[in-house]
Image (cartoon, rainbow, N blue to C red; front, side, top):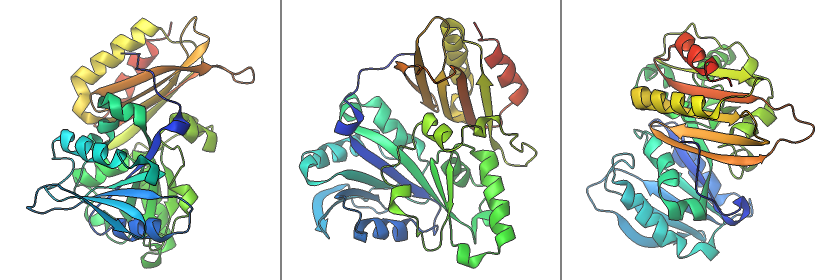
Length: 328
């Protein structure tokens, strides 16, 4: 449970941004901005659209960018091997680009795309997931709020772009901001008009790590998040100053994933284990678990465990009791 293969240094691995959002949220607008912006990066793109044609591996060069299309249906319904194969072909041209962007369809569950970068050893060595960027259509999201796709896209986001601010009043924007924070307290929230986020807020942000979120807001796990809402998807956060038991926590996570895996969208943790001078970094996507022994605790740090669970129909009291039982 708490182990992972060695990886190449981050600087040697290609950063990947997964771009998602419901139909009409502004993904294509953002993608066009990424492709035309003078950010100094060579960007490769995998675009996923619906169609009856099989995967087209022909390389299309547009504005000096590398673009692949997946036309055989929603990327989250496609055999994961197809995505791995396309990335493999693209990586033969690795010296021609600095960043990979994968745009999913508006009806896609981002989880299988994220999982791709965990399960394939070759991809783990060559690529690193930089961020999941989710666009939210402020004007129409409330019409689709209960859809599983919208809630999953919100839950998996590392960066949330609340788009079309020009079409809503400030109070509506704030209400949606609060609602998204209740689902996903980890995500960086950025209001945008016509997807006009700064490039350094969506590319090369290293947001797919809990400690990056903590660096932005060290106390966000300690905040009292509003759990009095009607959404099935919510989050539970833990902070524990006492060291955790390696054995107990591993068994608890294994049991939790086995029993509730499909309902557990994301778990992230920086863990302090009893008798261990290094911290551990943990994350999971549904039933896929990944962890690794990380760097030593720094002299200026106070070791502690920060742990977040985002999922559907979470029983906060039961989860809290289970987590606290894992203290060494």
